[in-house]
Image (cartoon, rainbow, N blue to C red; front, side):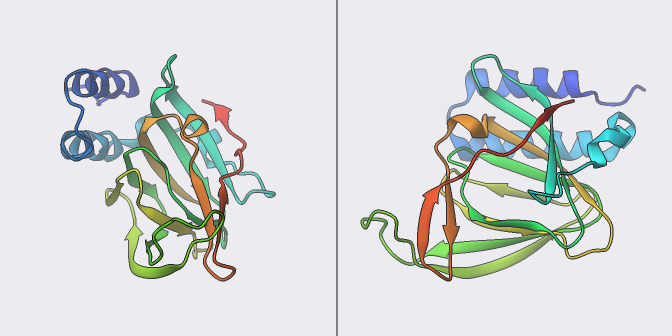
Length: 188
């Protein structure tokens, strides 16, 4: 029996999203497929373990639809590095491939009515290791950190390219929210 490939995974994603429009229903169908893809990591290349010292991680695009629908990528979190709280403005699934990444989920206490202001509190924490996953709805807010001594690699699947969603980045100490800056990405 052959391994489940990126190409087969993307074909299955398209089959689901061509029919289903409800984000929760999509996540329910996509998550087991993403976990299946992560079971056999023979498709993972050594290059996927590289990261930008400046941003603290590396993003390798495995698939990005011509219309910016469906994004499949790996993210390599460098040791001791991560990102501040942010949303995605699309559904998402993250599955661990190697190492451990800490996802802290946040809850917004304010109503979002005041421009540039956001009052967040920590809700819970999920450690994603090989084969473990977490899912996100468009407005969910989380931060990510690799507290380990080696790079942590994960598979990320989104309903839309993150460069096209107008997502937000939050500073819980200063209680601010801004447009998420562009991230360095490479095509795999």
